[in-house]
Amino acid sequence: MIDYKELIPADFASDSRVWVYQSSRLFMMSEALHIEDLLNNFTANWNSHGSPVKGYGNLLFGQFIVLMADERATGVSGCSTDSSVRLIKQIEQLFNVNMFDRQMLTFQVKDKVQMLPLNQLQYAIDNNFITPDTLYFNNLVQTKEELVNNWLIPVKDSWLAKRVSLSL
Image (cartoon, rainbow, N blue to C red; front, side):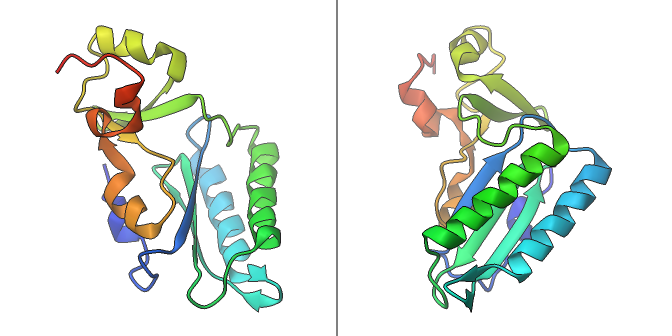
């Protein structure tokens, strides 16, 4: 697995706002290149009330779109957040994927990204497909600091630990 932390811009404040969107499937290389262009174009033109937003967008692990806004220069308002959601909806339509399914969980299993519906998590744990130490993509992170430190965490350290019975 690549170390995604090296891809996060160092010149963004640690409290920069982050949005993580998970695709319902891995993107093909040609799609990933198209998405990279869309993200670069979006962040280059991202504005809030006419002022440029210091933004970052990237496709990580071929499946997660991460958008980040450093609000030290320009705060992100409802309109500029809406424009980012429109971009994600455009990507959904272009590539026939779901980017808003919060019931689908993603884990790193044997150096691969594996998806699992929330309602099958207990079964996966009971059958040792998922262990307390399996790395979970916690897409609820909201800041750059959380993205760097708490995005990929063991199941036992995530909110999932309260939802299931873990045999430690």
